[in-house]
Image (cartoon, rainbow, N blue to C red; front, side, top):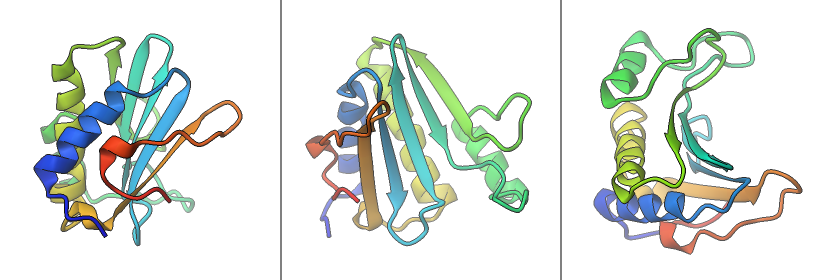
Length: 146
């Protein structure tokens, strides 16, 4: 377990997003409800951030209308044409630190306020190279790896 509070986790997440190597992905999820997650990928000249919101394997919405509206109020953009996809934001890379902080703020708001995760103690992460799957350590997050 971790003793991090949400502001400390947010700061570590912003630093971790900024430190992602090209072609790497970072997924932060609840240890019990793994469908509650945020994820990030650095793809050459952009950081793609997503929050779980699409359809489940039976084509049912993962979120209520209220939860979806809350994500959009936080700043997550809905998928343009395909409801199976997650809400997300894309930021040009490299970005100013304020953009990484904004993504981290949006992520904490989604995890804490929309998914109702009580503290970062119930979060785990997985970070890996998309090509090949090699693990990428993210010690700045302050939460355990999967």
